[in-house]
Length: 83
Image 1 (cartoon, one colour):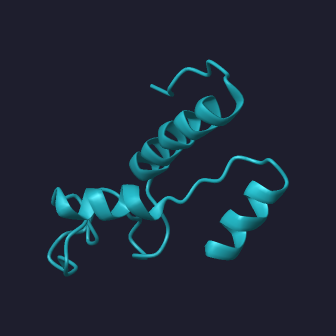
Image 2 (cartoon, helix red, strand yellow; image 1 turned 180 degrees about the vertical axis):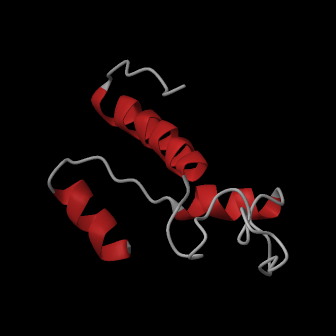
Image 3 (cartoon, rainbow, N blue to C red; image 1 turned 90 degrees about the horizontal axis):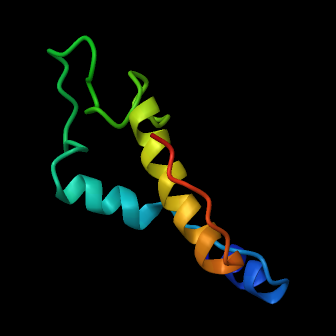
C-alpha cells in the first residue's frame, strides 16, 4: 500500500486504502473475530460473503461511499453517495 500511495501521489492521482474502513467496522462489531459456523447466511458477518474473502454487497456499498469521499476531496467533485 505504501508503494501504491506514493506512486498515486507522484502522478497526482487520488489514493484510497479500504483498510481503515474495515478496521473501524471490525471495531464496531460488524466483522466478527471468528466465523459463526452456525449461520447459513452471514458466517463471516454482514460485510463478507460466505467464502470469508470477498466483500458482501453491504461492504461494497460502504467502500464505494468512502471512495466517493476520497475522489471528491482530491478532485473537488461533488459525487453523491450511493444509497
